[in-house]
Image (tube, rainbow, N blue to C red):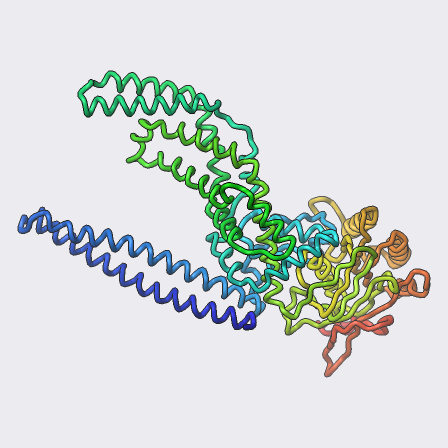
Length: 593
């Protein structure tokens, strides 16, 4: 089945299931109301008018309890069906291009000083992050953001590709992972949980734990002797006094231990469910096998260990119940649970970080496999081990709807180190730069790219496309641009060649300085082994291609006038553009020029 057929069938099936459970929920709700009213009538007849014996209250009371249990189960199943349907509807929304603004924007990961994040729409509404992000934990979100911001080495990208390829057909796995949290922001606050697991214990050693256990047994024994044998209250009160003194002595440490665990341990069910689902999945690729193996080799799987921690936190919360509070005092509940919590942390705390990291990586690989599944026409690029190469055929921008996406071929490598791209306004130059940049970003994450073929070597990416001034920082547009250019030049000191994407370079200054500066910047980048694209309206920069030793080629986009309207075909052509549309654009909006 095609992705669309699979999603439509899944959405239809679970929508029908949700509707059936909804009807059942309404019937049970009405039945509860009827039984409740009947109970009130029976209660009045039994205790108000005394026409029947009080035993008649038992049948409606039992029936009401049974209906409550049944109602809760039906509600859970209805919600599960609705969330299953949501998974398939979200997939259809992405296929239809209706996903923008519906998911996670990743704005909290945005760094305005990053060399390409803002220029390539990595974060924000309608961004690459929003398109790819179907993870359920904050650790998964953070790792996806990291992969998008830090191009991987060739060997790492190849291993990711292999893993993503294996996961592409596993729709059920991605669906199961999507059901783990109520919403994307409800996942595990990973760093706080890791920090808690690695922190030193605030409680004393094993001897104190045994003393607390003995005192609790003495207190319970004294209470039992008082009630059952008539031994008097003195033994019980003495034991209770000793237990209270013990609890007071440890109270600051116990309070600190319980408080430290409360916040990072929230929503542990998400992590436990994620690990359990991963543990049950067979893996074939080398990278996935290694990730799966990192969760094994233990007496108890990580999912059950996390479930133990979740169970301990639920027991700790029980002391807040007003009915259980008196018993909690007798049992030294808070202190005993604090000791149990510290025992768990001593045993498993140091492994929380690796567990979360492994789960997050598999989450991200599943998210990328979902993108690959929904875009079967996209291809996994051939990743080279060295050089400065970007050779794409049928390249298209991943954030443009397929029906509107115009594909182009483009090659940077041994025969051509840089392209000078000219063209009129709105002809597609900036979009082409972003297409190249986004394709490179996707390639290094291990995802497929919108192309018919792509060969790419390890590259650092630097872009100057969406540069703006800053009133707050007192930075002009020109100053912001030259700072970015300095940043891109500095990237060439790194280990991999730089892919530069410069839009209308130095257009914030006069034409004389611009011509000299742009020529110098481009020559400097080429001398440092960088490769890339420069767009320009200033055709003087295009003359740099006359120097054959620089391996620079001119390309352009063009437009035409049809029935008084400007028409763009967004097709990349060789050579320098021969006409401009600036005057036509000004006249088209009513300026008298």
